[in-house]
Image (cartoon, rainbow, N blue to C red; front, side, top):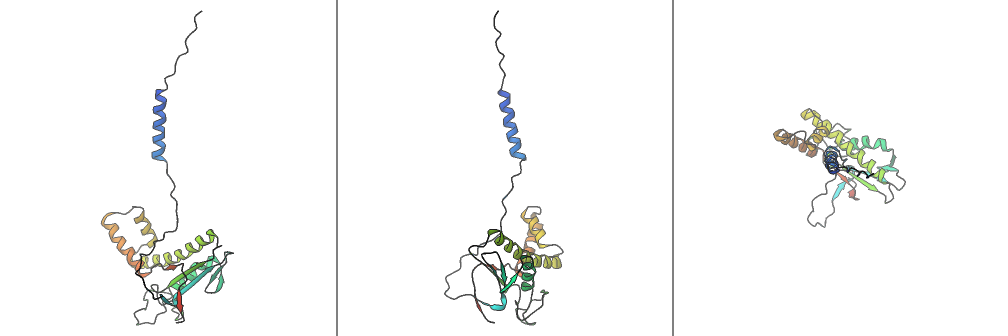
Length: 208
């Protein structure tokens, strides 16, 4: 009795199906983007032998030691209190009324012993080499949140919308064209009013 030959399976279409499935998954899969702290390095400055001198009252010093303890203005502080302390410093408005440095929109205590205005206020963050990365990020987040709070407040007062929400909408392309250009100009005006001045270098200071 003659043996029957085993029928062959045509696998040519299987390769086509696999290729189509691969394309489908590549098109529909969302790849998570890494997130980090947005920082823009300052442009190179011409050589200058003179040290930048900052009035002591315009300087807000935040120290983080090797044990992740927070020392703010030489006093121990919990991380949860850092944001409000930074807001109080930036928004103090201590310059006398009628002077060029007077801050009309500031709502702080206007203490003559604290910052003159947001343009003069500098936050200096000094970390120990053994400070944990988690604590470093947490401190940065709280300080940036303080600036965003004040920017949101002023954008709401002047334009009726929050700075952070509009900036996100512009960055993600939700708004385009002439409207986006107009909003971008307004965002920049708010940034000029409340510039983000975070320094990780130990500054020179004087007792004024």
